[in-house]
Amino acid sequence: MSKKIFSGVQPTGNLHLGNYLGAIKNFVELNNDKENDCIFCVVDLHAITVKQNPKELKNNIRETVATFVASGIDPAKSIIFNQSKVTAHSEAAWILSCTARTGWLSRMTQFKEKAGKDKEKASVGLYSYPVLMAADILLYDSTHVPVGDDQKQHLELCRDIAQKFNNDFGVEDFFKVPEPLIQKEFSRIMSLKDGLKKMSKSELSDLSRINLTDDTDQIINKIKKAKTDPLPMPTNKEELDQRPEAKNLIGIYSSLTDIKIEKIINEFSGKNFSEFKENLAQVTVDKLQPISTEIKKLLSEESFLDQILLEGAEKADKIATNKIKKIHEIMGF
Image (cartoon, rainbow, N blue to C red; front, side):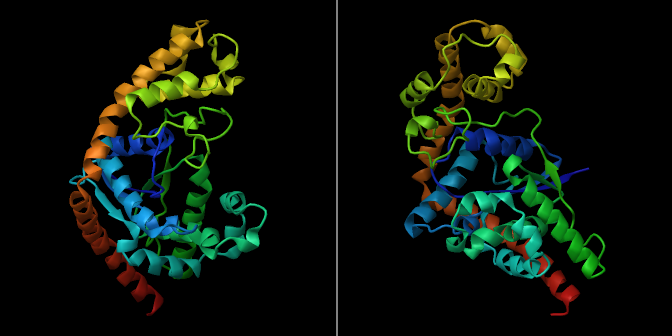
């Protein structure tokens, strides 16, 4: 049975190895599976929950599309579009916000983390954006959504909203209740400077992350300088779990090569980190350099990227507008 898959990426710019291994690599595999119907959305409406520079946002939208295509997502097989071009997303978000309960949103831990101590100054959008995320997913009758640990709670909210709407209006299965799609082999990618912090573009030091646009020398230098501990390479998985920086680097190696972590431990057991880092640097360069070269090429072809977004938006709009019409009929509009 074919899967209808929806996933979105915020156009934050400067996408890095964590974005690639955490999401985009998986998108490529989903795109290549003939059984899947995939929609990949550049969620620019989500991006404005915090203030954006308009010029940078436009460039970041294009860079996200360029990264999708350079990584191997085929716009002829999958729909690629930016969220703001399909107005049904905003309308559905309002309608579903009248179905969602404030108690549900108040339990969202990600809002608490992002808003910090001064919640009164956070935007309403930052608080309610999980409802927009639900609208994104439900408009397309999505059956599956790729999610990381930080989005599982939001998908549960989406499922609750779908079920409540269906029950409230007596329309069984009108909104499909989507299932999470969890990557089987994946290590969460952490900072190269701190194995307990997620790799992020917001971290001050550029040495903490490998950007998808980094050149060969930059990648080699960053891996060489990546934090490790004074001990040799771990000899078993139990030891690895107690050493976050070693676990992160081996996890990156595993995710890039699809080699199981146990096999990597056996190969490098007891050796110096310098030898392992040389291998990791080569693997990373081999994987990312073709992507980096293609991203840079595509970024010089703005009209090509804009055409992908335009054609994708037209396809998405047909599906989403049809769903909105049905919602209107159900609600008595």
